[in-house]
Image 1 (tube, rainbow, N blue to C red):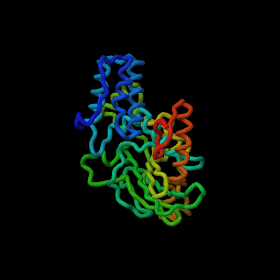
Image 2 (tube, one colour):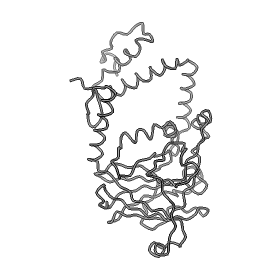
Image 3 (cartoon, rainbow, N blue to C red):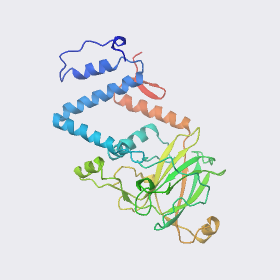
Image 4 (cartoon, helix red, strand yellow):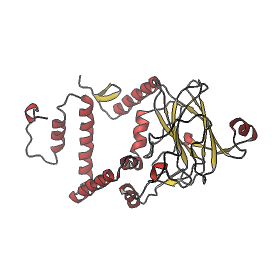
Length: 329
């Protein structure tokens, strides 16, 4: 922006005691109240962090170099920043804030760094995974609203690893997508497909996030799970996953994604189910009923929780397009 178009307040002799208020002042000249509020809180907490930890120049530079390395390893198929957000608990926190769930609805979980838009649309009953080493698994699901009414024509993204714990995008010589699909719920809100039994696996730990985990004496493993993402106009976007009970990493997920309501028992296909879904008896079986929340329900709950939380913090705010901004009227 042309400096002549900016009215900069005078700033000199900045110190530990006055740098924060001056930074906030110069950042508060734009017209967008939400940007001003976000930057005001970010600068306040960031400066307080530096003061409270007595951050050294050496540590500051180490942080800059770490974030630079995180960016450098990112690619079209690897998002190290999402991974960093995941292992710091930020991903789950943001999802819980932005997508609150009423009782009896399906809770969200983390997206993870390996969702892609390459998956092919697949009809009911087709195989999503073609890994010959994987244990076959039939997955039968329904989608309903909070009143128990089936929801048809929901777009469902599904993805999982192969039997070795790797996603398709982790193979540089892959021929195309595998272990992932896009489906649509039928008139009864149902969808079903053939996959493989999910396995536990380590998140990528050959980069800067892996080095951080090692420094923190944390393991990189995730419990066995399968990802689901639901989209339909009029309903709150849902990113979630189903986790297998009794997995060795069920209570120590490296990215904090496990919630008790998302932990399921692995069943076995009986003769009746085998005949109906054209699957062998004895095959592993996942059954689950997903419950979606309308945008109206989610918006009301999000606004309610936002005002409760910020009032408890003593902050005078109002909501603008569902997001808090200072109430200066």
